[in-house]
Length: 266
Picture 1 (cartoon, rainbow, N blue to C red):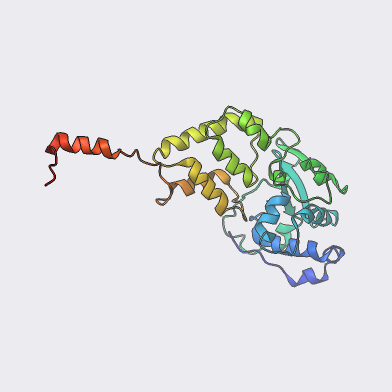
Picture 2: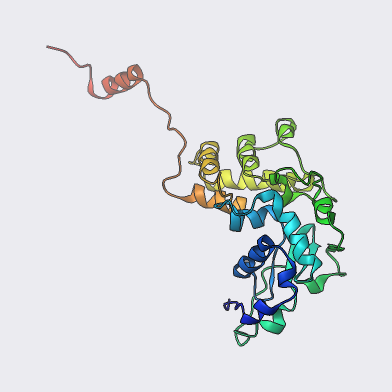
């Protein structure tokens, strides 16, 4: 992926200086995460996790408002494809000519998909519509983890629902939920299949114990891909194995005597 450049002309941009300092900071730092077509996630929680989680510069609950600031002055386009929010930097290809000789890679759905199958929503320019789309009405409240996985067209199970579900290894899903994962109704069957596959691939590993350690390790900065991250964790040689069956002392003594005879103490 070629490097993206920020040119001096941004210092003379009327759009750039119409927005707040925090929105400017988000815009500039966002360059580091764009794919070769100027696209990145517009999921508020993912943005906060990738850029600001280790700093106190911007709080999680501010991200939605900052995205709307950027969209209002047409610095970015915000849209949803298959229920997930994305942003594409306006006129990115006009200015980012460096590296066009390389094979460019698209990581996220392009804004050109708007109006085609899969694209269900585009930012309308009305303040609060992003928050409405992701299902968050408390403008002044803290940013809930569910933002990353909320879709108005699909229902996600709440944490209190887990014990009522027919699931393999519920303890693993609870650890996932602690980091912000949400299981949708349509994904219930695929979740069970994934867990069964894990149990088959790592028969000697204690999955629940590893899930708890994985949860604690990523508590401050949840991974982008929960399943891949946990699979990689379990695959490590130092991951906790299942406790082996222990033989009681009396049984061990009996087996020894059967083979070598009774020990006579002098």
